[in-house]
Length: 89
Image (cartoon, rainbow, N blue to C red; front, side, top):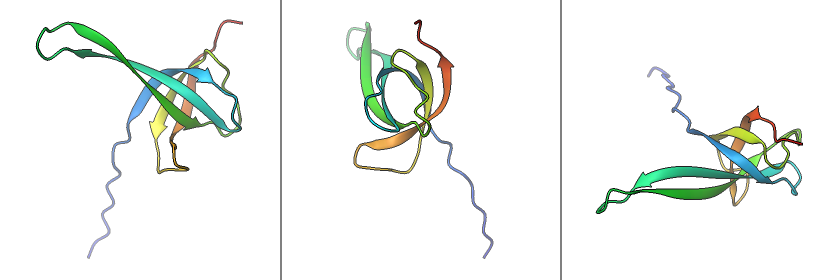
């Protein structure tokens, strides 16, 4: 048997930090547009994710890129990869 490990392509999404009150965890709001099945109008949908922020670098309003990871807790299975842009002070 050969050990061919092909790494699964991990999902990455961008979103805005809406809360950083928890230790090493941020809440990220991810918005997307979906097309209505019948009428064809584009509708804005949003999802809140809990992401691991190891060094507590994120502030509210920052735009961050997060990737999917193995579950760290009941609700946290995303990790902050990078801060795309900082919030205006």
